[in-house]
Length: 142
Image (cartoon, rainbow, N blue to C red; front, side, top):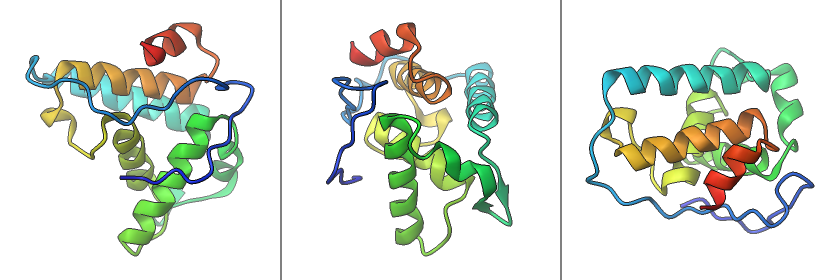
């Protein structure tokens, strides 16, 4: 579990709880089309935030989004903790796994997710694309 010892609220997320509890499972599994949609949404997160890697490490302007919102801060912090645990640099896999861990409470492959978990992760990705998205914020708070 990623420890959050110093939460920093931003103007975008003040009062928005970051829940780490996982949604109920057993309500259907994600299908191959949804896995592709999730991958495309993650690619959009990386494009919007200028997250890219060279030799497996996040570089350049990738660092510029660290403080864009509380959501971004938590993903970066989680990715750093995962990288430290795995004795590697922060790369795309650590970023994606941190987002999944923060959203579902555990790292799991998309094929192993329930439909509510898939929906929750899609919502979190939407918040990484636009932390002020009112639709994503209301789904996140629900």
